[in-house]
Length: 141
Image 1 (cartoon, rainbow, N blue to C red):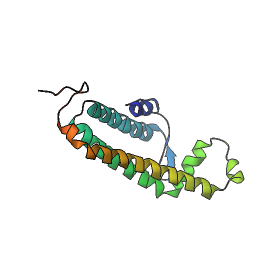
Image 2 (cartoon, helix red, strand yellow):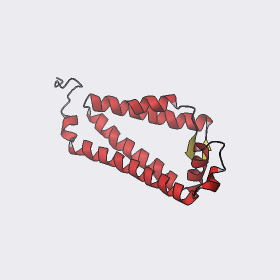
Image 3 (cartoon, one colour):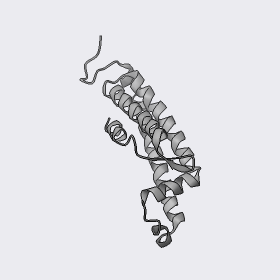
Image 4 (cartoon, rainbow, N blue to C red):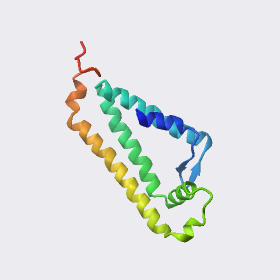
């Protein structure tokens, strides 16, 4: 649920997408989609609802596709890195761009792997989500 709040506060922040860092409506829709997804996921997991577990799987797939697009488009990664360092483009002359992009790729892969690890955890404990328990641990009738 904290991720939903973070995304909500980032609604107008630019996002790397399809070879460029995009703002405006594209960024708002991107952040709004993730914010709603994370909030719904958090509520569903907190309340031990089956749809919460299903949203984890949907969210994992969406996040994986999003990051796969990012990783397969070097222009997006470079645009994101330039955006991250702001107006300090001369930094690229001081460091090896390839190494930085490789580290960014590794970090992205590790985040995706973490999502899949959490999805696996919820899959292993899927019986908990079909039990109809509420957030207080009491069974619903």
